[in-house]
Amino acid sequence: MTGTDTDTTSGAPAERPRQRPYAVLDGVGKEFTSARTGERETVFDDFSLTVHHGELVAVVGASGTGKTTLLHLVAGLEHPDSGRITLNDGTLADGSPGPTGANGTDGAGPRLGVVFQQPRLLDWLSVRRNVELALTSTGLDPAGASQALADVGLAQYADRYPSVLSGGQRQRAAVARAFAVQPELVLLDEPFSALDQLTARRLRLLLQDLWTARPRTGLLVTHNPLEAAFLADRVIVLEGRPARVHAEFAIDLPRPRAPEDPRVFTHQTEILAALG
Amino acid sequence: MSTVPRHTTVSTAPAPAAPSPPDPAATGPTGSASSAPGRRGRPAPGRAAVRAVLPAAAFFAVLVGGWQLVASRSDNVLVPDVPTVWSALSDTVTQPLFYDSLGATLLRVGLGFALAFVTAVVVGIAMGRVEFVRRFFEPAVLIGLTVPGLVWALLCVIWFGVSLTNPVVAVALSAAPALTLSIYQGTRAMDSELHEMAYVYRFSLTTKLRYLWLPSLLPALLSGARLGLSLSWKVIVLVEMFGMSSGVGYELNNQFAAQNVAGVLSWTLLFALVMAVLEYGVLQSLERRLGRWRKAATV
Image (cartoon, rainbow over all chains, first blue to last red; front, top):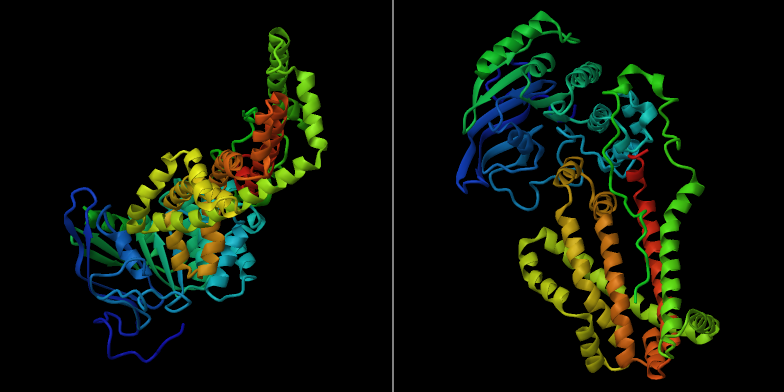
């Protein structure tokens, strides 16, 4: 990991002092104009959240609680109306989203690996080229694409077009792309919710394998309590509008975890209860 | 005048992805040998060709036969029979005049079309991205679409005389509105999700243009090009009739003035043939070649 390593003065009131904050949302406010009613809706008001180095935080909540907006804010795809978002001690977006500076193109800002709900591959390029483009764009050697695809079990499909792959394989390719860029922050936006149960389960296990092989910092947005309990170190339940942290659970289970583990199930039940 | 049949092998629309096992990658390489996309589903190429060509051939047989029937019945010098047209046709093809005229016409169309294409790409994309630009150019596109090519031809003859500017501007004015509309719609239909992906992976501007914009807009560019070209052919003939002293339209007008119906027909047929080769041969094969990744989905 890059960045400062003697950061003790600033930071959130740490419940565990050894943890360094990586992504900090500080008093973030975000409003939307509803497309249907034309009224202003406040999604976030003075919302704060900290993701620590090497931690995978899952954000769980019903639809419309601003989970995806939260992820977009962290990814820099949207800018907060007020408050600050800092990644790795560098300001990513502040209250005044200017046309320059705020959006860190040209390799400025931390490297992100994002898995969306849909694979979002370029259909006119082979799977390998898709990964290679992400690698060259972040200034990495495109030769790493083969290994990244092998890691997700797509070595023999590398030269196919995404359209001939199954949905699960396409999402594997998206996961490969996200991890190939050696991301400082992994953002997962309902990554497996468009897949059938069995495929989603396999991909969760794959994600866990990738994570245990090389722990990273991540933010997972999901509506699936089992997914959150199985994958995350900490689960945050969002509720209401503007969104508030309704409950928070630490999942102190060693990896690798088994999806059938009764402790995972216990946590799932807790999260479900908090979701109401 | 158009005797060009519409072929039935145009469709390159993406077919729904074939149903496949949920995630074969997880189960290992067991099915790799048998699942290689083969050609077993396709009919034999010879039979397919016959099936594709046969209806068109039947159409031409009916057309020629019917023409001959009418010509022999009417016995009128203004309705020449098939052998007369055929000899006029072979006469025209063997003249160097035909190739000079065709060259002049194609040059004018090429320049005018290129001008229209460049303008339409810039304006169309800007319209798709910026609300103000869209509202600004919308009336222009609408008016441009409704003004007949004949009017552009007349105006350009009046304004630019016999210079090369005349046909080039006339062609550009007739083709640009339809092209602009097509590219604007293509821009609107672009996938905003892919733009988000390109943003989070820090794609550079050149990468975005080359791998996101161009492939996304390609169907719109090609269909717009075909539409624009077909409009260009129609207006160039008019311009050459009124205002030029060379080109296919000029020669057509000469044949008309001489009341040589066989000559008019042979020039028209040959011109239509060249345009069909350009449109169906060049543009469509380009479309197929660049759409290979779509084809892959159907095997």
